[in-house]
Length: 222
Image (cartoon, rainbow, N blue to C red; front, side, top):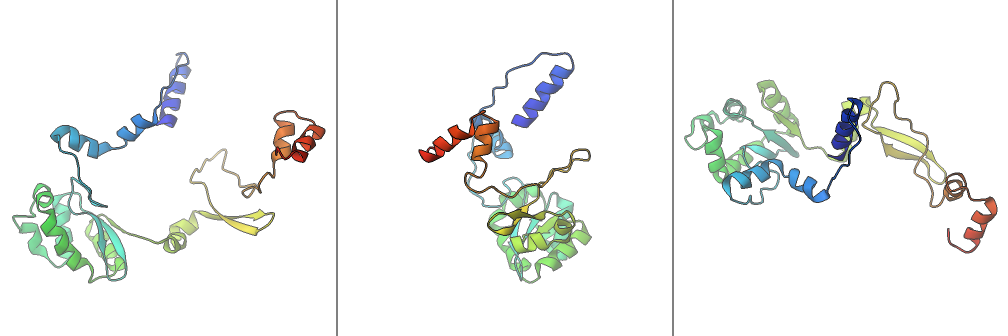
């Protein structure tokens, strides 16, 4: 929100406006980030309850166990639910009067979710993802970090980098997700040692003499 506000203020300035003060409060942003949960309360007066990874307004839209892990299933409409039911080998779910529409599925969440969980454990994550993607049903695997960094796209994007370190040799780092065509991110230094740049900062930024910095070190100020 702060970034957007700054860019908006700069755009206003560039269009002939003057500078302006941005009042950005962490509390305001936290409330704004409640998004659909906030609107659920404001429109009904009922405070939402804990649902874990489940969506309060769409069912099924959460994590489910598989034969070898877990995956996320995000059924966004009734047509997708019918396709999912067919892939799950339970086509009757789509015509069940308890599950025929999203509104009904939300109302009968406690009945439907256990049924789905009983079905998803009979296929692997890869099987579910491949079959549901082929059917046009949004889903995705839940990966551990070993799987994340072994993912072909993560490898292709070079999201794991190594930098030389004074004490630890080559240390792994996560690459910046920012990709700029004219001013690409540069990876020059590994995380510094404790106090590694203290003298440089004091001398270059604050203009202190070498003797003054040495005196601070001798008195254990730095």
